[in-house]
Structures are given as structure tokens and as C-alpha cells.
Image (tube, rainbow, N blue to C red; front, side):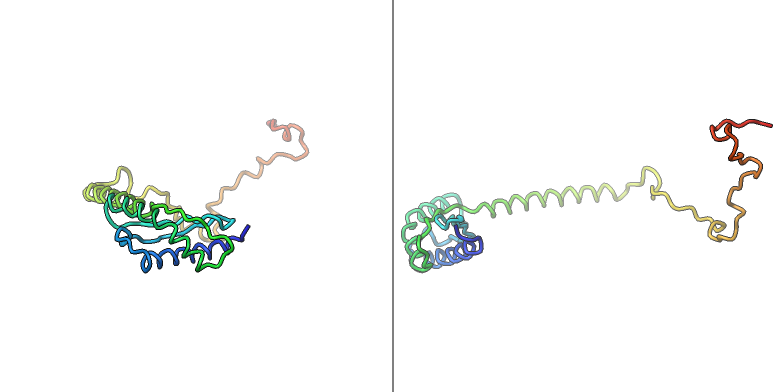
Length: 177
């Protein structure tokens, strides 16, 4: 098993080799609009999955997939020649789903923008259901700010305190007397 950094370096190198070979050596016109986006190599360095995108409609994408399948041998030979690894990885070409995902995200974001615009137009003439600020404010008493002023502190009657030695007082029962 190879370590992960080596697999990443090999994957990056395979991407460069495949892109360069498609541009300079393979003379298929169906590959003119192909872009190599990513490559993933297995941990044992035996298989490489090359992700690509094609600019165009479904027919051009199908034609590019067929052209990549037919050029797989030439591309694997170029990878083996330029990487110098003991075993040249087999190449699998997979269309990249990132552009479709990005287009879907753009559609969702546009829908959110429209919903936000509708809410903004409804909020123009709206008023609050309750108070404008529903949060409680701290009490602002000037008398409590002065610690020397003890007039506001409640003080119990000194005669109301129970005798700590009385059993009735400990149990919570008071006798009047």
C-alpha cells in the first residue's frame, strides 16, 4: 500500500499527463471541449478515476465519452511512460457532476433571492404585532445604584426571628406567646 500523499501526487500528475496528451497527441475532434477536473487514485495505485467535463449538449457529451473510451489505451501508455511507477494504473473516465450541482445551487439561490424580495415588499407597510422591542429591559432605579442607601432594602421585624433553641421553631411551627 502506498501512503496517501504519494497517491495524491500521482493523481495530480496523471491529471496533467492526460490533459496534455488529449491536447497534443490525441487528434479526435470530439475531445476538443473536454476538461480534466480531477483524478483519484486507489491506495494501492492500481486504478485511477479521471473526472472530466464537456462543454456542450448531451450529444457532444456522449461523443466525448466514446472518444475517451477509445483513447484509453493511448492515455494509459502516456501515463506509464511519464510517471515511472512499477504498475501503470488502469484509467476510468467519469463525467464530473460538479457543473450540474453548481447549476442546481444557482437555481436554489435565485429562488431564495426571489422569496427574500417578496418578504421585503410585504414588510414595507407592516407593523409589529406587539411592542416594537419584545425584550425585557433591566430596571433603571437610581436608588439602587447607591450601596449606602439602605432605605429600599426590606428589613424584617427584629422580634419575628425564631429562637434557635426552640424545637417548635426548628420544625416550622411557631407558637404565639
